[in-house]
Length: 214
Image (tube, rainbow, N blue to C red):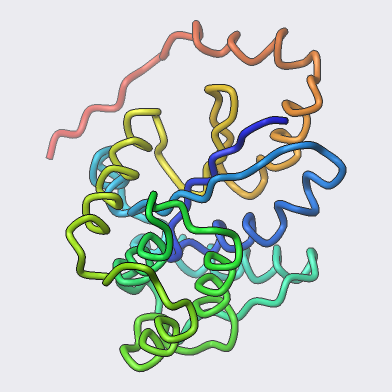
C-alpha cells in the first residue's frame, strides 16, 4: 500500500477539485492519504511569487477555468462571495481536529465544502463558529500547538520542494496540481515511463536567465 501526503490550502480552488476528484482518479488502487494543511501564502513568499488571484487577467481566467473543471467532472462548485480571503482560521480548525495536525477526510471535506459550495463568505465569523460547532475540534484554534503545527507543515512542504498546492507527495516524488492526478496514478501503477523520463529533465541547462533591473 502506497502512502500519499496531500498538501493543500483551503483557499485554493484547485486543491478543492483535486480533493474531491482524488478517490475517482485513484479508484481501484491500494493507498492511504495523510491530509496536510499548509499556508499557500508561505510557499509564495518563500519563492518570491504572487498567487494567481493577485495577477490581473490570470485571476479571472483561473476562476473561469476552475468552474469549467468542476463542470466537466460533475463536482458541485460555487465561487465564494469574495476571493482571495484569509484562510488561516480554516487551516487552524482542521489542524485542531487531530492531535498530530493530520485532519481526516471528513474534516477536510466539511471545510472545503464550506468554502466552495453555496457562494458565501468563506471567512465569515458566524459561519466559522458553525463549522467549529459541527467539527468539535479537540483543541482551541488559538492553541500554540495548533499554530506550531501549521508552521511546521508549511516548512516541511518548502523543505521538500513544494511551490504550490495541491501537491501529492509519494515515494519522495511530488505531483503538483489537479491535472497531475493521472500522472500520480501512473506512478502508483509502476508505469515504465518514469524510469525513462522522470529524471531526464534535471540535466537540461537554462539557455537564458531573466534579470530584473528594477
